Image (tube, rainbow, N blue to C red; front, side, top):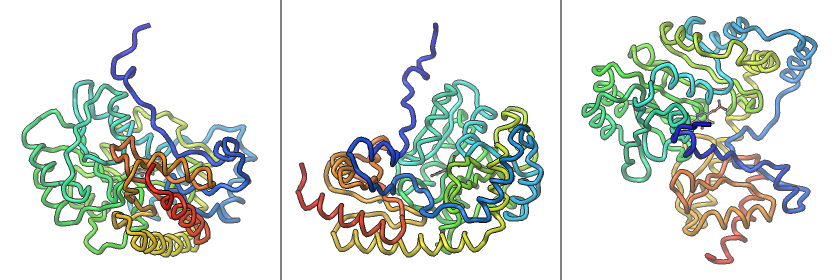
Length: 368
Ligand SMILES: *Cc1c(COP(=O)(O)O)cnc(C)c1O
């Protein structure tokens, strides 16, 4: 059995620790998970009803063309159906983009401390991932990325998560426009990953769907996993020029989005009440968590998403372990090269309170 060195050295993505596992391991009955940037509230009655109805027909294959889903997303995003393709979460679309546009030996570019899925997908396809160092407080250096683009012809795709996970930071319209001058000239495809779009409040944020109308080489990723609270269904959308959409259709699995997920998403998109409720809970929670961190004198990065990255000032893995014993799951980000930081996803008000209390206790024990 011959296996390529890229596959052998691949480190699998480590997801947030599941609630059930934490309960078992520590003998706890109550566990709060604020580790995967999920939505803290479950699906509405309307969404449940739509999915229950769809269950009756699981003997049939799903609609491979996702006709109704496409109509619903098309209306929600105000884009044409021919510019949309869906994935089993946006994670699958990241994989597909790399498969379509890169050959072994080519490269993708992203920033240091950027979402880790790009690097994993690239490595699995024997594609190099070039990470450009951040500047200042873990901010993307789009100027540095533009400079690097000028020096090489290896790069096929640029991945720009905005806001970024795990930092919660964003880059501005001015920074993006300057970067695009170089990327457009070199005809390189730029992927704006906007998983947290609905949480953004910054007025100088470069909205991807607008950029798509301006630049021919921009594509946008959106997901149903965050504000819509459907992470378990696995649905992501790629908005792109129809030529790009056509290429993705050639390589995607014909039934990559299952029928229950299609029904659930269609119902969710018409539920604007839910969307607004989640935004309000999230923005209030961000303020609650950020003001707590400030009070505690813990350094954190201002967030445009539904989580906050903060510095524990010590080995964050031991803080993480101590929090688990108290039934609170946050996310260590050592795999991102940030061994003293934890990422805290916004939960419901009381969940955030419980996490604060636990964190205060753990940190008062001093570094170990
Ligand atoms: C959560 C997240 C996604 C969404 O992934 P899905 O596969 O759609 O659940 C995409 N990009 C970033 C940066 C994320 O943080």
